Length: 130
Length: 130
DNA sequence: TCTTGCCTTTGAGCGCGCTCTAAGCGCTAA
DNA sequence: TTAGCGCTTAGAGCGCGCTCAAAGGCAAGA
Image 1: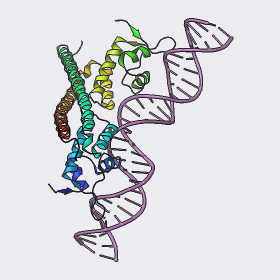
Image 2: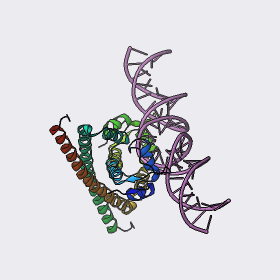
Image 3: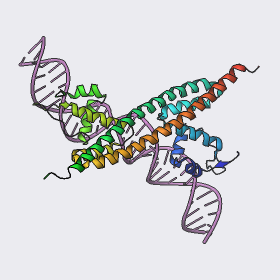
Protein backbone atom coordinates (compact mmCIF):
# COMPACT_ATOMS: atom_id res chain seq x y z
CA UNK A 1 0.00 0.00 0.00
CA UNK A 2 3.08 2.26 0.08
CA UNK A 3 3.47 2.07 -3.67
CA UNK A 4 4.31 5.09 -5.76
CA UNK A 5 3.97 5.60 -9.50
CA UNK A 6 5.33 7.90 -12.17
CA UNK A 7 3.01 10.02 -14.24
CA UNK A 8 3.52 7.65 -17.16
CA UNK A 9 2.45 4.68 -15.08
CA UNK A 10 -0.64 6.51 -13.90
CA UNK A 11 -1.42 7.40 -17.49
CA UNK A 12 -1.32 3.74 -18.46
CA UNK A 13 -3.33 2.68 -15.43
CA UNK A 14 -6.07 5.27 -15.75
CA UNK A 15 -6.17 5.94 -19.48
CA UNK A 16 -5.70 9.66 -18.90
CA UNK A 17 -2.75 11.25 -20.66
CA UNK A 18 0.14 12.78 -18.69
CA UNK A 19 -0.98 16.08 -20.16
CA UNK A 20 -4.42 15.65 -18.70
CA UNK A 21 -3.05 14.57 -15.33
CA UNK A 22 -0.96 17.73 -15.11
CA UNK A 23 -3.90 19.77 -16.32
CA UNK A 24 -6.15 18.34 -13.60
CA UNK A 25 -3.56 19.20 -11.01
CA UNK A 26 -3.14 22.70 -12.42
CA UNK A 27 -6.83 23.49 -12.18
CA UNK A 28 -7.05 22.02 -8.70
CA UNK A 29 -8.91 18.77 -9.26
CA UNK A 30 -5.86 17.05 -7.84
CA UNK A 31 -4.07 18.44 -4.80
CA UNK A 32 -0.38 19.22 -5.50
CA UNK A 33 1.13 15.81 -6.18
CA UNK A 34 4.28 14.82 -4.25
CA UNK A 35 7.65 15.23 -5.97
CA UNK A 36 10.88 13.27 -5.83
CA UNK A 37 14.34 14.87 -5.44
CA UNK A 38 14.49 16.06 -9.04
CA UNK A 39 10.97 17.42 -9.15
CA UNK A 40 9.20 14.49 -10.84
CA UNK A 41 5.70 13.72 -9.64
CA UNK A 42 5.03 10.51 -7.80
CA UNK A 43 1.50 9.31 -7.28
CA UNK A 44 0.21 7.12 -4.48
CA UNK A 45 -2.55 4.52 -4.39
CA UNK A 46 -4.73 7.10 -2.73
CA UNK A 47 -4.15 9.43 -5.64
CA UNK A 48 -5.21 6.70 -8.02
CA UNK A 49 -8.43 6.12 -6.14
CA UNK A 50 -9.20 9.80 -6.30
CA UNK A 51 -8.39 10.03 -10.00
CA UNK A 52 -10.66 7.11 -10.71
CA UNK A 53 -13.42 8.77 -8.78
CA UNK A 54 -12.91 11.96 -10.78
CA UNK A 55 -13.10 9.94 -13.97
CA UNK A 56 -16.42 8.50 -12.88
CA UNK A 57 -17.78 11.96 -12.28
CA UNK A 58 -16.63 13.08 -15.73
CA UNK A 59 -17.87 9.90 -17.33
CA UNK A 60 -21.31 10.56 -15.92
CA UNK A 61 -21.40 14.09 -17.27
CA UNK A 62 -20.39 16.25 -14.35
CA UNK A 63 -18.80 19.47 -15.60
CA UNK A 64 -15.28 20.21 -14.45
CA UNK A 65 -16.41 23.29 -12.56
CA UNK A 66 -18.58 21.12 -10.34
CA UNK A 67 -15.82 18.55 -9.90
CA UNK A 68 -13.68 21.44 -8.77
CA UNK A 69 -16.25 22.38 -6.12
CA UNK A 70 -16.24 18.84 -4.90
CA UNK A 71 -12.44 18.70 -4.80
CA UNK A 72 -12.30 21.93 -2.88
CA UNK A 73 -14.75 20.62 -0.29
CA UNK A 74 -12.70 17.46 0.02
CA UNK A 75 -9.52 19.38 0.68
CA UNK A 76 -11.28 21.31 3.44
CA UNK A 77 -11.56 18.17 5.52
CA UNK A 78 -14.11 15.83 6.98
CA UNK A 79 -16.48 18.52 8.15
CA UNK A 80 -17.57 19.05 4.54
CA UNK A 81 -18.80 15.48 4.23
CA UNK A 82 -22.41 16.64 4.35
CA UNK A 83 -22.00 19.08 1.51
CA UNK A 84 -20.18 16.49 -0.55
CA UNK A 85 -22.94 13.99 0.05
CA UNK A 86 -25.51 16.53 -1.10
CA UNK A 87 -23.57 17.27 -4.26
CA UNK A 88 -23.32 13.59 -4.95
CA UNK A 89 -27.01 13.03 -4.34
CA UNK A 90 -27.80 15.76 -6.82
CA UNK A 91 -25.48 14.13 -9.27
CA UNK A 92 -27.05 10.74 -8.69
CA UNK A 93 -30.40 12.19 -9.71
CA UNK A 94 -28.73 13.46 -12.84
CA UNK A 95 -27.35 10.02 -13.61
CA UNK A 96 -30.76 8.43 -13.15
CA UNK A 97 -32.23 10.95 -15.57
CA UNK A 98 -29.60 10.13 -18.13
CA UNK A 99 -30.37 6.46 -17.74
CA UNK A 100 -34.07 6.83 -18.25
CA UNK A 101 -33.56 9.09 -21.24
CA UNK A 102 -31.18 6.57 -22.75
CA UNK A 103 -33.69 3.83 -22.20
CA UNK A 104 -36.36 5.76 -24.08
CA UNK A 105 -33.94 6.59 -26.86
CA UNK A 106 -32.97 2.95 -27.10
CA UNK A 107 -36.59 1.98 -27.65
CA UNK A 108 -36.84 4.55 -30.41
CA UNK A 109 -33.70 3.17 -32.04
CA UNK A 110 -35.15 -0.31 -31.87
CA UNK A 111 -38.26 0.87 -33.65
CA UNK A 112 -36.29 2.75 -36.24
CA UNK A 113 -34.17 -0.31 -36.93
CA UNK A 114 -37.30 -2.42 -37.32
CA UNK A 115 -38.62 0.13 -39.75
CA UNK A 116 -35.48 -0.18 -41.85
CA UNK A 117 -35.73 -3.95 -41.73
CA UNK A 118 -39.24 -3.82 -43.09
CA UNK A 119 -38.10 -1.42 -45.78
CA UNK A 120 -35.34 -3.82 -46.80
CA UNK A 121 -37.78 -6.72 -46.84
CA UNK A 122 -40.03 -4.82 -49.25
CA UNK A 123 -37.09 -4.01 -51.46
CA UNK A 124 -36.26 -7.68 -51.82
CA UNK A 125 -39.80 -8.41 -52.93
CA UNK A 126 -39.45 -5.87 -55.73
CA UNK A 127 -35.79 -6.17 -56.77
CA UNK A 128 -36.17 -3.86 -59.79
CA UNK A 129 -39.05 -2.07 -61.37
CA UNK A 130 -39.42 -3.26 -64.98
CA UNK B 1 -50.83 16.73 -41.71
CA UNK B 2 -50.30 19.63 -44.14
CA UNK B 3 -49.24 21.98 -41.37
CA UNK B 4 -46.31 24.30 -41.71
CA UNK B 5 -44.38 26.13 -39.05
CA UNK B 6 -42.03 29.08 -38.76
CA UNK B 7 -38.52 28.68 -37.45
CA UNK B 8 -39.60 30.24 -34.18
CA UNK B 9 -42.41 27.73 -33.76
CA UNK B 10 -40.03 24.88 -34.45
CA UNK B 11 -37.63 26.33 -31.91
CA UNK B 12 -40.33 26.31 -29.26
CA UNK B 13 -41.51 22.84 -30.21
CA UNK B 14 -38.09 21.19 -30.29
CA UNK B 15 -36.11 23.22 -27.82
CA UNK B 16 -33.43 23.95 -30.41
CA UNK B 17 -32.70 27.62 -31.04
CA UNK B 18 -33.38 29.18 -34.45
CA UNK B 19 -29.59 29.62 -34.66
CA UNK B 20 -29.08 25.92 -34.24
CA UNK B 21 -31.81 25.05 -36.71
CA UNK B 22 -30.15 27.20 -39.38
CA UNK B 23 -26.78 25.77 -38.42
CA UNK B 24 -28.03 22.22 -38.84
CA UNK B 25 -29.35 23.10 -42.26
CA UNK B 26 -26.11 24.82 -43.21
CA UNK B 27 -24.02 21.77 -42.40
CA UNK B 28 -26.43 19.46 -44.18
CA UNK B 29 -28.13 17.68 -41.30
CA UNK B 30 -31.37 19.12 -42.63
CA UNK B 31 -32.10 19.22 -46.34
CA UNK B 32 -32.74 22.75 -47.63
CA UNK B 33 -35.94 23.77 -45.91
CA UNK B 34 -38.80 25.13 -48.03
CA UNK B 35 -39.24 28.89 -48.26
CA UNK B 36 -42.25 31.13 -48.58
CA UNK B 37 -42.51 34.02 -51.03
CA UNK B 38 -40.24 36.30 -49.04
CA UNK B 39 -37.60 33.70 -48.27
CA UNK B 40 -38.66 32.69 -44.77
CA UNK B 41 -38.30 29.02 -43.93
CA UNK B 42 -41.36 26.94 -43.34
CA UNK B 43 -41.07 23.54 -41.77
CA UNK B 44 -43.41 20.60 -42.20
CA UNK B 45 -44.45 17.83 -39.83
CA UNK B 46 -42.01 15.57 -41.61
CA UNK B 47 -39.22 18.03 -40.88
CA UNK B 48 -40.17 17.99 -37.23
CA UNK B 49 -39.99 14.22 -37.09
CA UNK B 50 -36.54 14.30 -38.65
CA UNK B 51 -35.33 17.01 -36.29
CA UNK B 52 -36.55 15.01 -33.33
CA UNK B 53 -34.73 11.99 -34.61
CA UNK B 54 -31.55 14.03 -35.00
CA UNK B 55 -31.96 15.24 -31.43
CA UNK B 56 -32.16 11.68 -30.21
CA UNK B 57 -28.97 10.82 -32.00
CA UNK B 58 -27.20 13.82 -30.43
CA UNK B 59 -28.71 13.11 -27.05
CA UNK B 60 -27.29 9.63 -27.17
CA UNK B 61 -23.82 10.88 -27.99
CA UNK B 62 -23.55 10.51 -31.74
CA UNK B 63 -21.06 13.04 -33.12
CA UNK B 64 -22.37 15.45 -35.72
CA UNK B 65 -20.05 14.02 -38.37
CA UNK B 66 -21.79 10.67 -38.06
CA UNK B 67 -25.20 12.26 -38.06
CA UNK B 68 -24.13 13.93 -41.28
CA UNK B 69 -23.28 10.55 -42.80
CA UNK B 70 -26.69 9.30 -41.84
CA UNK B 71 -28.41 12.35 -43.29
CA UNK B 72 -26.51 11.97 -46.53
CA UNK B 73 -27.58 8.34 -46.84
CA UNK B 74 -31.15 9.33 -46.18
CA UNK B 75 -31.13 11.94 -48.91
CA UNK B 76 -29.84 9.33 -51.35
CA UNK B 77 -33.09 7.44 -51.13
CA UNK B 78 -34.54 4.15 -50.02
CA UNK B 79 -31.74 2.00 -51.43
CA UNK B 80 -29.50 3.15 -48.57
CA UNK B 81 -31.83 1.68 -45.95
CA UNK B 82 -29.42 -1.17 -45.30
CA UNK B 83 -26.51 1.12 -44.60
CA UNK B 84 -28.64 3.29 -42.37
CA UNK B 85 -29.79 0.27 -40.44
CA UNK B 86 -26.17 -0.81 -39.94
CA UNK B 87 -25.18 2.62 -38.70
CA UNK B 88 -28.09 2.59 -36.30
CA UNK B 89 -27.25 -0.90 -35.06
CA UNK B 90 -23.71 0.26 -34.34
CA UNK B 91 -25.09 3.22 -32.50
CA UNK B 92 -27.47 1.03 -30.54
CA UNK B 93 -24.50 -0.93 -29.27
CA UNK B 94 -22.96 2.34 -28.23
CA UNK B 95 -26.09 3.31 -26.34
CA UNK B 96 -26.16 -0.02 -24.53
CA UNK B 97 -22.54 0.47 -23.50
CA UNK B 98 -23.35 3.89 -22.12
CA UNK B 99 -26.22 2.43 -20.16
CA UNK B 100 -24.19 -0.31 -18.57
CA UNK B 101 -21.40 2.11 -17.74
CA UNK B 102 -23.89 4.45 -16.15
CA UNK B 103 -25.33 1.62 -14.13
CA UNK B 104 -21.90 0.75 -12.74
CA UNK B 105 -21.17 4.37 -12.01
CA UNK B 106 -24.49 4.68 -10.27
CA UNK B 107 -23.58 1.82 -7.96
CA UNK B 108 -20.29 3.52 -7.15
CA UNK B 109 -22.12 6.75 -6.37
CA UNK B 110 -24.47 4.88 -4.07
CA UNK B 111 -21.51 3.45 -2.20
CA UNK B 112 -19.80 6.80 -1.98
CA UNK B 113 -22.93 8.40 -0.64
CA UNK B 114 -23.25 5.66 1.96
CA UNK B 115 -19.66 6.30 2.92
CA UNK B 116 -20.41 9.96 3.50
CA UNK B 117 -23.47 9.06 5.51
CA UNK B 118 -21.40 6.90 7.82
CA UNK B 119 -18.86 9.69 8.11
CA UNK B 120 -21.58 12.10 9.12
CA UNK B 121 -22.97 9.63 11.64
CA UNK B 122 -19.56 9.37 13.28
CA UNK B 123 -19.26 13.12 13.44
CA UNK B 124 -22.52 13.36 15.35
CA UNK B 125 -21.25 10.89 17.91
CA UNK B 126 -18.19 13.05 18.52
CA UNK B 127 -19.52 16.59 18.08
CA UNK B 128 -16.31 18.24 19.30
CA UNK B 129 -13.07 16.97 20.68
CA UNK B 130 -12.57 18.45 24.18
C1' DT C 1 -44.58 57.31 -44.06
C1' DC C 2 -42.30 55.34 -40.37
C1' DT C 3 -41.56 52.09 -36.78
C1' DT C 4 -41.43 47.54 -35.13
C1' DG C 5 -40.52 42.95 -35.48
C1' DC C 6 -39.25 38.75 -37.45
C1' DC C 7 -36.80 36.87 -40.77
C1' DT C 8 -32.42 36.41 -43.88
C1' DT C 9 -27.03 35.67 -44.60
C1' DT C 10 -21.97 35.18 -43.79
C1' DG C 11 -18.57 34.88 -40.87
C1' DA C 12 -16.67 35.54 -36.43
C1' DG C 13 -16.61 34.20 -31.51
C1' DC C 14 -17.15 31.29 -27.52
C1' DG C 15 -16.94 27.72 -23.71
C1' DC C 16 -15.45 23.33 -22.68
C1' DG C 17 -12.02 19.98 -22.04
C1' DC C 18 -8.35 18.87 -23.24
C1' DT C 19 -3.76 18.68 -26.12
C1' DC C 20 0.34 20.31 -27.73
C1' DT C 21 4.65 23.31 -28.11
C1' DA C 22 8.92 25.15 -26.73
C1' DA C 23 12.53 25.45 -23.82
C1' DG C 24 14.97 23.47 -20.29
C1' DC C 25 16.81 20.08 -16.60
C1' DG C 26 18.80 15.78 -14.67
C1' DC C 27 19.88 11.04 -15.10
C1' DT C 28 21.75 7.03 -17.51
C1' DA C 29 24.10 4.44 -21.16
C1' DA C 30 27.50 4.53 -24.84
C1' DT D 1 31.74 13.71 -22.93
C1' DT D 2 27.80 13.43 -25.17
C1' DA D 3 23.39 11.75 -26.73
C1' DG D 4 18.94 10.57 -25.59
C1' DC D 5 15.13 10.03 -22.67
C1' DG D 6 11.64 11.31 -19.61
C1' DC D 7 10.28 14.64 -16.92
C1' DT D 8 9.28 19.86 -15.87
C1' DT D 9 6.78 24.57 -16.90
C1' DA D 10 3.80 28.32 -18.96
C1' DG D 11 1.19 29.35 -22.35
C1' DA D 12 -0.75 28.69 -26.92
C1' DG D 13 -3.80 25.95 -29.87
C1' DC D 14 -7.51 22.88 -31.13
C1' DG D 15 -11.99 20.37 -32.14
C1' DC D 16 -16.60 20.29 -31.11
C1' DG D 17 -21.08 22.18 -31.11
C1' DC D 18 -23.06 25.69 -31.01
C1' DT D 19 -24.05 30.98 -30.53
C1' DC D 20 -23.89 35.53 -31.75
C1' DA D 21 -23.08 39.89 -34.51
C1' DA D 22 -23.81 42.86 -38.27
C1' DA D 23 -26.24 44.34 -41.98
C1' DG D 24 -30.19 44.14 -44.48
C1' DG D 25 -35.21 42.84 -46.45
C1' DC D 26 -40.19 42.62 -46.07
C1' DA D 27 -44.72 43.44 -44.07
C1' DA D 28 -48.13 44.80 -40.81
C1' DG D 29 -49.80 48.45 -37.75
C1' DA D 30 -49.77 53.40 -36.00
